[in-house]
Image 1 (spheres, one colour):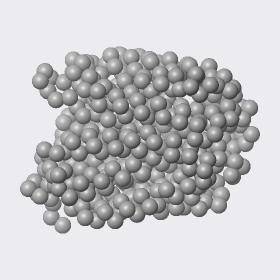
Image 2 (cartoon, helix red, strand yellow):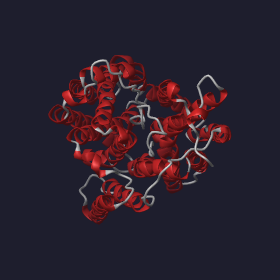
Image 3 (tube, one colour):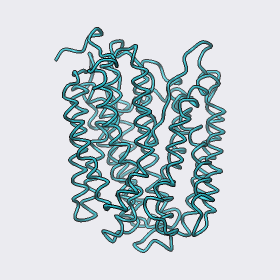
Image 4 (spheres, rainbow, N blue to C red):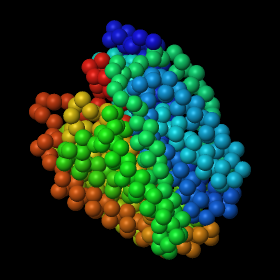
Length: 498
């Protein structure tokens, strides 16, 4: 199929433009919603399968593993074989995997289905912004991206509340069944979107890099999850396999003609520093999402819907303030905001560590989560601004894709490592959770404090501040991860734009 010409690009005022926006919002919302509701359902899943903490870790981690490992590969496949085609495949794949999750008769089947679901997520997540960039007229592209970010953020914000209600009223399997009608609608209406692909593609698709990333992250996660907090012991071979695969991954990426991870981006100290900050900040966020809902339901005795509501401050504050914070970061530079935001979030983690066994929802939980939410908002949005400003404009898509993958990898490793280092293990983990929860919050606070120090030492405002009279970068950060590419680019001005 011939590429879409500039004159054929859709306007948002036209039915074709609204079809593109509606399709991408619905598909992304399905993935973002799933990323938050599963945490709320973990205690119910554990009771249903009589699962220990390792089973709950894999329920979340299996999905994050395949998404983090294959996200960049998914964008490259869309560029090469057609963005609409790969996006629709991702939506159908995600929907079928959701049905398998809902029907899972055992925990092992659920974990396998979650990993399968993550493959679909890795195909559809980068495809949403690529479709907007390649089919919407440049004059409307900024508004389209802003609408996509805001509406997808609403889905992420509602995720904990919707998940809590579904688990409490209908059972945990419905958090997956809700994806079936959404996926069917998205796959159907996406048929009317014109096909686009990169005009020039060089080298082979980096399948070897994707496979090594899955092996490396998977084996490393397996080593920590099966250690049961008693040292690595017999699990050290898995750790060795994981480290060896990750080393081989770097070697393959150095030599690949079209690498999944462009290592040349890391020659910028600002880009490297911003991604290190992203890693520590999102590790803290992933650990918080995992531990807070478990503690509130298993120890504090909250119902699922109330435990889900405890996560709402993070989603809502990010949704409401992210655009303003993004503009401020563009004008003043991200350094101060990053350091201050990480520091404030660390204070919020310390407050969470001091929650009582039966904490007051509005007196203790909500205030603590609000402090975390404000801090993370002032950190998550500027770090995206820093990543994009530090990269060459021609590599904006690759740079933000790398940042997204780093954030998801951090969340995966946090869920794998934190229970092991805080002593949370076994099938009867209620008593262990009382002691491990404050330890985990202190570890998350330390990660954020380290992120604040790194941002202060490595991020340089004078290089990343927008020039006088320049436009503030549009920024909105769904809680599921940094936006794949919040900067409008013209797909006909360069070959790759994922």
